[in-house]
Image (tube, rainbow, N blue to C red; front, side, top):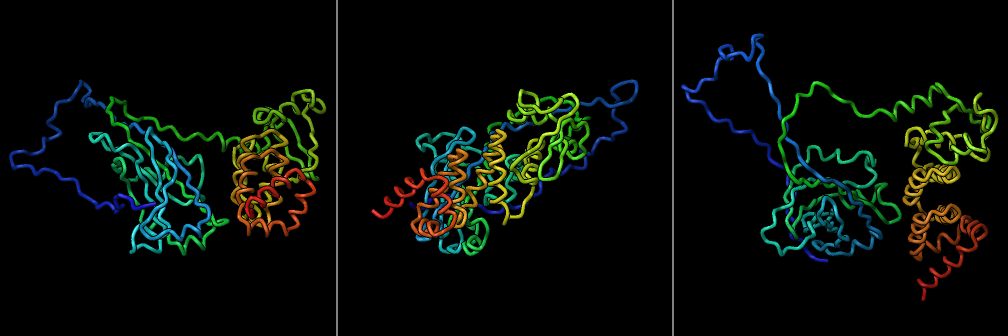
Length: 397
């Protein structure tokens, strides 16, 4: 820990471009007197463009045991591990009680260029950055959209930019972002490498963003061209075998391979056993769009548990990992044992580690042992009990 030679992030002052004044003799040419470029009288036109070469990425920093970090004195920091983005090494400095006395009620964060200071003549690294609590409009596809209007700052080795009032501690402690005494921040960074100019044709055509996701969702909704019907819990949903086969090897075998039921050419009816209708519908929606349906926050952990089981059953690895990631954020005393059993039964190593990380706190472990979920864990996954006991002994001896 220690103090940091960070620059302060200040609002940039607005400026007005300076235009040189014309003398009375330097009057603007009369456009009507300008010679035309051809017999048709149309002016000759040309176009050029300026491009910026960039490299971007983002880093997630999770602070575990937040309440314990409040013991760090004001002005002192805890450094993150270094990470690489855009060909440069960075780190984040975390000030639990503010970077100075005036902001002692806030969490301060600074982004530092963590590179060798020995090369005195090395040019400054130009970069844009944005920081937010993870979960605020979190979306992997969002990319670096928040940085479109951010300023480009200079970073030199050992120096960086500090966000002095990132979040008030009182606000953080009352928010949903603080879970199980932990919170996560996301730093988006765009490194500006170079600028270049090129000749370019005028943009007569504007290409819209890809709307494949929307179109496939519409195909599922309208059932147009559907050639398979799934029957579950007294409901039916029509879908498209080729789409499902492309998204899942299990669906491919079930609908086109030796496992297929009925006459494939005439359309098939597939009965889905042991799955709630809303779970199978969520599975289908993800197969078509890559998105999960919106759920109420209080239902998110239970829904993710069921969808994870379905994703594992149908071999949809990315959906399984998305559910696993979401469940890592929902572990608490009431759910830890159930989620740990789920992780063991469906080979979710990351989720299993997150559960053991939660149980590593003696108070959490004592509380979880008293729950019904722990009794279920001892019956369904007896092999896990040895790991839990070993961990608890390590805490007390």
